[in-house]
Length: 565
Image (cartoon, rainbow, N blue to C red; front, top):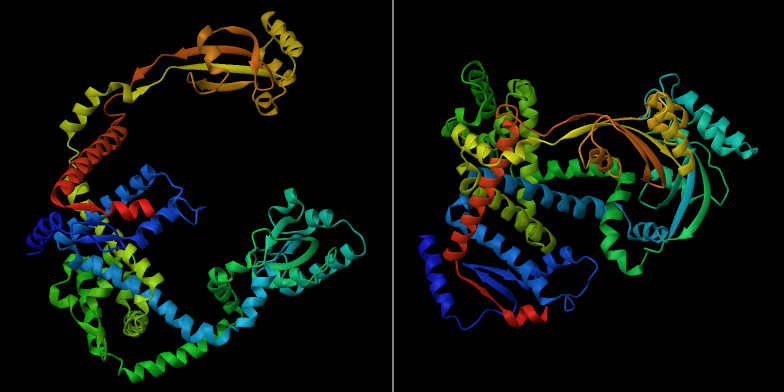
């Protein structure tokens, strides 16, 4: 039916008087709006606020890419993938999560984090701080030091702070005492940071310091920090106009200070709403599901296909207007059920899992009833996600599932493309790098006189890394060691080569044996053959499919609007 409607829409489109003023293109029976097109342009040209300066050819390239994507969505809808259970499960799961998060923000976070506190935190971003720190870990901190407990760590951190205040070098103290792995090289220096970059306790303490001041020990999950403030400077990236854009991120960061209170409040609301919607876990159904899992575990195994349709439709939790069925848990675990079967086989753990998923779905249901999924930013995210799911599935059906990697095809590809499976020629290289030409000439003469090249490299090379290796660079291809390999190949194997310019100095080269180019056997190159042949088939199938879609669906572009954007 839908294919007939699409064909009808295509015919009507040919005689259409025009598009809506906000439509950039019509693709089949789907539209690309001006807002959607500008969103893609903004990601392609992130530094531009307006796109009138963008060349029309570049705009068309972006639009054509967008059109190709919408062609695939048309094909996915025609294939009925909008009713695919796996796609709908994944989409609904994402919708539940992001709408519940927004609901939590409205009910809890907005009620606990004052606007004044958000503004204060935003204003702190006007400055950047340059700090050093000394981290003292203990046996239960994330940066562990099993030699001390928290009390002893605090005591040591306090002693270090006092030593630094009395004039001892902060850098030396950091190298000696800090459990930060980077302290040995950076001597405790963290450089500049902006409010919001560090964990709350650390940044609160740092922003409270004056230039040159040293903090008392500051506890974070990493351990105790002693902080030294070097300087403050204006943050060039700070603008008053960014407040609304950064407000949500700052608000969520500040909520960490209210997390315990917020979660208690949320749990009260959860219980209240469960009563309001007559939420009920059906214990007999959970027990039945647990029994089914146990039986399948003993027999064919815990795979989604081993559950009957009836077994997938058992209602575990219900409320006014919604429910949670076994099929949703089965889809959630997919082919990984065996990995998590310990929890599924335990009735108590399965019950907790059902409660968690049931409550989550209830609040997603509430959020959707409130229209939260229709809010512009969330609606955009959800549309993009749904389209991504549809595209991935239709590409799987039309392209990836049609690739056949049989032995005859792989052998034919190997025989037709031997150069792709050749091992390039290699030559063994030793070299001695010298900063001056005179030194290089001296080394060359010694080598020519019969001195051991490896010993010369250890003694004279100005490249410390290769000096330790006796100048040995190993077997290299012609492009393997730029500036050296080319010269080595020109002179051939077992040669001592006069100094040639290299990097900022000169290099004396000695070559060993040469390995000629060789064709790898079919068996040896098998994995590479599979990859290359698969890539070739992907390109061919994708090109043919896209051509088919372009012939199948009518595409109309609003040229007047395109030029104005």
